[in-house]
Image 1 (cartoon, rainbow, N blue to C red):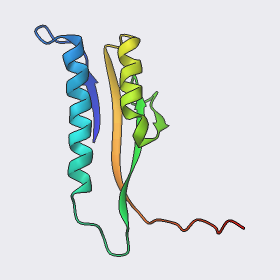
Image 2: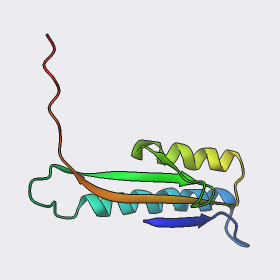
Image 3: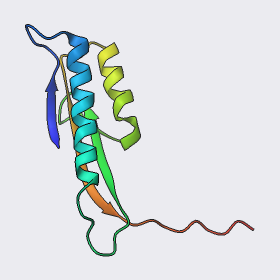
Length: 98
């Protein structure tokens, strides 16, 4: 998902647009996690970028998406860019604690 979310609409409130954006992201992530995993892979990871525009987007952690959307809301942005790309990953073993 590479999308610019517009946060202005003549009939829909600003708060509702924020909620819709969060819902779209949550729905996309759930949909991607449900897809079949390639051979030799443990889980779907996500590489994410967030910013006011695609040029200004910076890399963020998947768990910080809602936090970043909320900060955009508090700064009254008119739009924001979000990129969420599913990446197959494997778990690595933790080193033994001695």
